[in-house]
Image 1 (cartoon, rainbow, N blue to C red):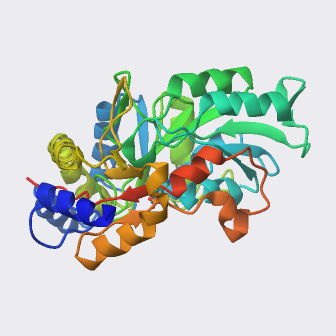
Image 2 (tube, rainbow, N blue to C red):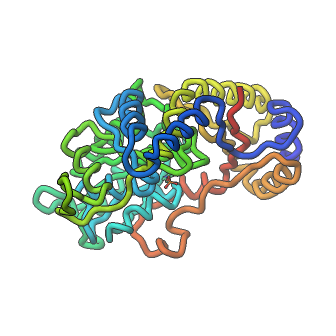
Image 3 (cartoon, protein in one colour):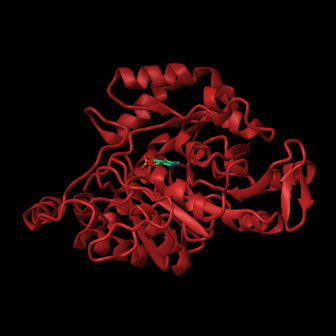
Length: 382
Ligand SMILES: *Cc1c(COP(=O)(O)O)cnc(C)c1O
């Protein structure tokens, strides 16, 4: 039984006990900064920790600017709006992603258009996408339109699955050739680099998430990354109710959002960010242990960082060989039965009720991956 061999291997790597999929880890200045924040009374939408967190995020990722917001989904929604996505545009997103990627498109009244992934990265496949666009895209002035729906193709949203960078070079070329704004959903890939450059900094804008299950957490939170000062200022403005500075009056010059990150959350974030280098080292050590423990099981591949990339190894991932697909449910059940928490990949977006009628490319690889991926315990430790 493959399930038994996998349990044996996971135990070899992890030891005895109960292993969740991923829990937050607080071993630094969290208490101190949060208490300082409370003592200051600046717990809400203004405060020094928000500015500090934004500065430190920008410095860490190499983005010119970072704008902290209330969660990763809101970050994506605002980034897409700033990238020029309007109602009734189409936005190309992976079918294999967390639902937030599609939701952010939908919130703007635009339509997600699902594209296929590649085996090596689990992310969007630029070659398959180019083939698909050759068939469906037609030139309309400066832009391209989906000839099947008549809608403008506006943006492309790659996502770095479980922290593994996708083929950014290939996707940048597609976005250039088809006049698509590139907005990276880097919610899962803080600390991951593509050819040395931090993910989320390749497109016009990129977004991060600091939800409780991500590599660092602010409780709930997100950020928008960009190298464009004007877009960053606009992101800040839009996410802080679009209020113009005034000593006593309330003047709002567009429809803004209350999407800012509270100072309390930013305090937690500052403490977490200090530990990110250690977290990355811990994730990589766990990967090495799994690699050794799983080496003899032919039916599974342990997801490894794509060549030229540094992954944060946020969620460790098994990809079953085709021959073992039938055993996936059994493996999920058997591991969870013995306190080794495992999960399947997300349902593909076009299989979810709100998105079943959306346009989509052929999705063979995503469909195959969905039937073969198992995430295994990925906790941080010292
Ligand atoms: C977590 C996540 C998000 C959204 O982040 P929230 O902070 O939970 O709103 C978006 N996209 C992907 C791929 C994610 O994993």
